[in-house]
Image 1 (spheres, rainbow, N blue to C red):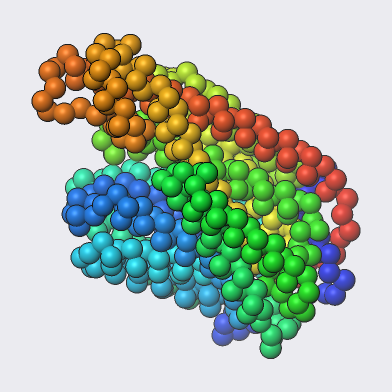
Image 2: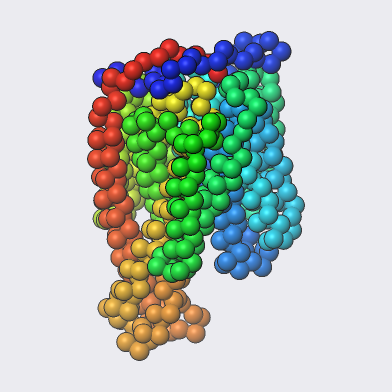
Length: 535
């Protein structure tokens, strides 16, 4: 089956001629990859180290649980609202320019968080991080799409995916070390040297590339509609766990967002110069890749969230110890991304995308064997399967989305992929935590009584469902030692009941994703071909 890395653009018009590199220098694709890897590593590492730092931020700044949720939510909302816009701005005015603006802004915002001294400042500058991340992320793929010829683009995406997966998985280790031995501010200050290095390398080697067509027009109404729609959807998703998925606030926010997305799509088909050209979705590979990307990070971020709760709160490992135990996931991702790119280049994403989802299903179902005292020999095989699956799907879906888009729309396609990734990750964390909470609520009293807690005490402890759903046993200092042991045992068993439900649902979704990938990519082997040209 031929590789789908050839540019199968549906547009009859040829792409515009390549833009000159700064100061007339020739573009070196591999130096372009090196430069964007620094910015990508910074953003992805930051996303996972902050989760480790949140408890210490709460203690140091006297922040409430709601405040800490906004440390994450402000970032997610700003990022989701700006990703496609960031890609479009790069396509229109210069991908190198907006990548550099994103790196510089993200770096400054990171330092500002550490200097803020208040939870309000942390939240505001986290939103700024999200905004600049929205300028940076899609233009990493846009620059690669413009720099690499089709036959090498798949391998470039494989390395891009490897950097993304490894930096995300290393976050808990790096964050744990810095929080334990330095301070919570250090997890943000670390972005300063990485960002500075990214700026220096990028300014020296990155070529400029842009879509020079339609230079005088911009879809402002589309920008507003899409930003507000994504804000509503993501806000409803991240608040669904705390408000309840059937609450008026959750349903209202998500419904308004979906209606605005429909209105946005209708507007985009009628405007001459759309923000997100609907013609991109004529490619079954691109559409399928977008859906599977969301599922991929639903699994990745959702599973990692409750795995860290299990390792730290149930098993009692420190953040660093928990991070070290997830190293097989990082190492498997390191192998899977270039391997997935190579297999995609040879056989197309029809093989690697379903294979990656099946591996993730195996990882999820393998976690059904986990218990409160499981040896590490039972724990690491699912980490390996998950890392292999996520890395393969990320490489294949990047190729299917950005590799199928015309070069002129490379930034927009990168923004589309990054948006699907963020929404999928937000859904994964929120939905799986909700499933765990529901299962804990229905089994906590029974597990406590089975562990030897008197019935009247077990009934009173039902109020601690939220804590138990985070893996924390509701133990007080005044409890007798035997009672404390029984409460800890029963709470841990209730938490594991929730985890088993979450991984069962996750595994089923992975199998659904594999079926979607196999069906959606079925007929992508013989699309009309057009020549590759750089924008």
